[in-house]
View 1 (cartoon, rainbow, N blue to C red):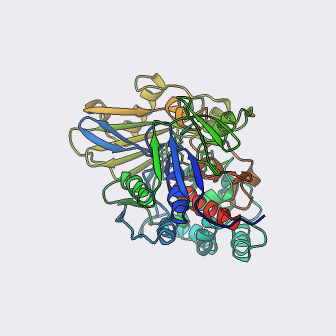
View 2 (cartoon, rainbow, N blue to C red):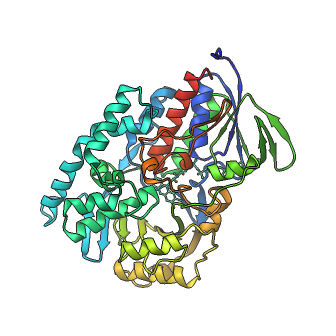
View 3 (tube, rainbow, N blue to C red):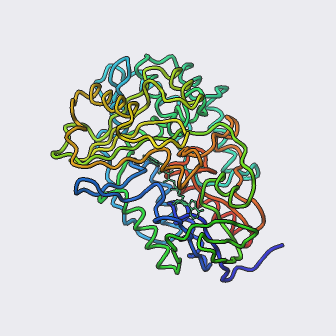
Length: 452
Ligand SMILES: Cc1cc2nc3c(=O)[nH]c(=O)nc-3n(C[C@H](O)[C@H](O)[C@H](O)COP(=O)(O)OP(=O)(O)OC[C@H]3O[C@@H](n4cnc5c(N)ncnc54)[C@H](O)[C@@H]3O)c2cc1C
């Protein structure tokens, strides 16, 4: 049945970046949109205070900005973010075989191997935007061409680890590239081969808004509110039946259309459905520290686990890895240390021996002893925190999809019923900003085609 487009009411569950993006897109097409957010809008991107400084938590690297530009084009808005290239791009990767800056700069001993790796990934580069923003449909020639390019480049390799092994790269470069399986929230042997190509596809195009990632949140709020979106903060949804939702305080609201922008496992619970346990993506312990003086560290340092095999075994067992994959972002006196942790929903605090041990490892490897001891204040977000707003175990990218469903080739469950759809991290493989912004564009287009 085709419907005529007119003002209809849309309820969006969850005011993270995905929910806010879709809210603005739907409101721009004339819908009356209300976003229900149990906490503050922003989700994983939230502003926290520590030691007199403000921190934008969650995403720190803005990659594939063309997807953001596609959102702006659909909203007919100029870009308010003033994206600036991040010095050092993907950063120095401190592998057990030696440090590797990515991209590998001219004059570096690994340059010929890096160039060989980039050449192998290059045929996919023109198609990545299509894969991120086009509904995965086998009758769409643009999607088919992009998918064919992906298959040609990834070849028969099922995982990022297998693809890298086949390239026969020097161990330091292979280890550094393998860390980017984290973009799928998985260890390299579990992440689809596409994730081994991320450093080549991103190259030096790593950005951050001039005034911090929080300006992305401000912009999306503004775009929505200017088009009539109501954002209800502190309005947690307790149950969903059809298109009727019940808020925590007992208030009942009915909409013509519901879009969930919360983790699919959370949505299932709201609908009274049981959730099948299964493999999940990683969680994390994020430490944001205000230091008395600017740190002497580069903008981004990546500290991989010593052994990806041990790291994977620990994550699969829900145990704390002996050495974990850690990202360190330094921005003047602001320091962010992001430790990868299993998605067990545990409240790992700063004084937990494992957290202490990993932080000491960071100080040792980066040669900055006592760095965190001098902090004027810290904020720590752990798997228990991520579980409160996202996947029940705090898995940052939700459930792990089986390898064949993990790539962009497989149709995702955007449409659950005629009037219940979903967006957000948990339904877009590798649910970082490009995937969720692209996912909002895809869902907006599919809804339009379905007459909404
Ligand atoms: C430490 C860390 C580092 C990261 N680094 C990067 C990076 O460098 N680059 C990048 O691109 N991405 C990065 N990411 C990923 C990125 O932050 C996420 O993909 C993105 O913020 C997820 O947005 P979302 O809207 O899909 O989900 P969320 O942000 O999880 O939003 C879901 C919202 O739903 C709300 N909610 C849940 N249940 C209910 C309910 N019952 N009723 C009402 N509201 C509800 C929650 O409170 C939350 O606000 C990082 C994430 C983390 C945690």
